[in-house]
Length: 125
Image (cartoon, rainbow, N blue to C red; front, side):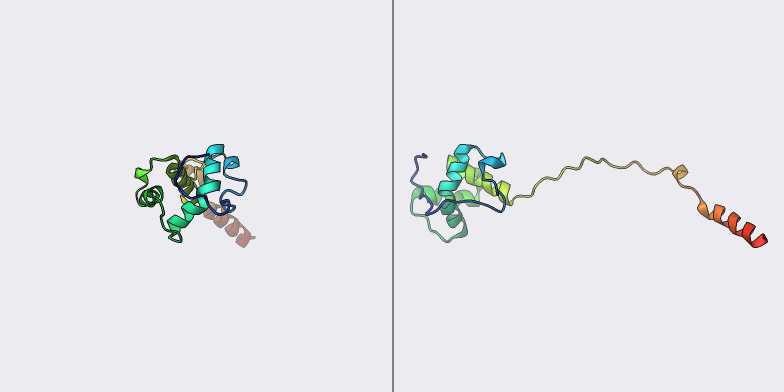
């Protein structure tokens, strides 16, 4: 277990919307990171949303990290920043299709000229 003065959540924290199979099974988190999120996630979310107030120096520092993620030093802070980035950040979309080359004029056939020839032949009959 993690040595910290950070409060454990009253219940386990899960994000069934973004990580429906669990944090570790998503492939984005290690088992240790999953444990941190599960045990402390409810408290971290409460501090982030303002429904909880900091009771320890570590929790006050965590609130500062929420404002400036570059200040993250502890494993707990880094895991929460990683979670927020993955759960709320934009997913990258990579297409397998490159840019089309410009169409060549010879790729098109002038069907109006062909249709005009057919119509004039039918009118003559």
